[in-house]
Length: 264
Image (tube, rainbow, N blue to C red):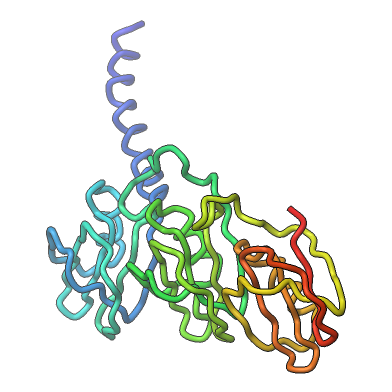
């Protein structure tokens, strides 16, 4: 190698390395929540007039889990924990992809699917919430976070709730909820979305964990099919009530009822 080539090599290699830096920054995605702040959890702050500088600082800092940028104070706050969001017209906040864990999510990441149960909510267990751009963002956040066991997305407010336990399932026309595919509370494998039998004039009695009104027995069957906890259902044709069950009880005659079990 000539002296000129060696000189060029020493000059060009650092340039190549520098051009790769923006790609590394972009690889760590951050959400952007206008007019919201996440008070608390600050471990450092600095002055800047550019939101991009604030996001870049969080993206390149392994400790950073979230940020808040106050446009009036021209100050960026970096946070090592995810705190609850609160409305603030002066501030833009966001969360790092992986919730501060960086690209190394550890074993088990991405291997558990999420259910999607529209018109329902797994109540309680919230450990954080944030404004998301849609249902998909909320589901992705739960999938990325090892702590998350269930989620609820409110379509009216656009707020995503991440939960570290699966609570009681309740009807809510404004929300979509779901849980990670795992053994249920009794140590049995999830029932999944298998087919269901249809047995008019009978009822698998007992073991109800939720009930609600639906227009017909097919709607009741669809709810059971979508719900990983559901092992059987009963629909009362007179009252229009659907009963979802987490176990298969004794079969009894009832002329007002259509019942069925999930075939796993």
